[in-house]
Length: 92
Image (cartoon, rainbow, N blue to C red; front, side, top):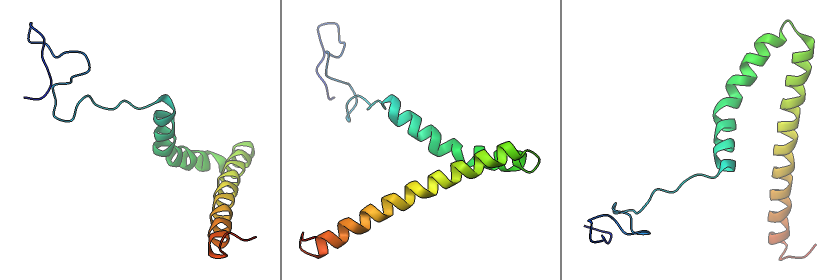
């Protein structure tokens, strides 16, 4: 058995009983990002349905989608610039 036990048979602090040790906990930021990744597509789909009859909702959905696309474009442009920089041997 892995882990060290004390006189009462309990695992000592810092010595988990499982072979992989204690499970890794997620940070609040990781939990939030996972929730956004999981829930955002459904929320946007529902908003698009509502947007068919509400122009304010439609405008907000379009703003959100535009912002998402702009962010992806900026990331792609930065990656392309980094690849071009590397391909040029680090010369601008």
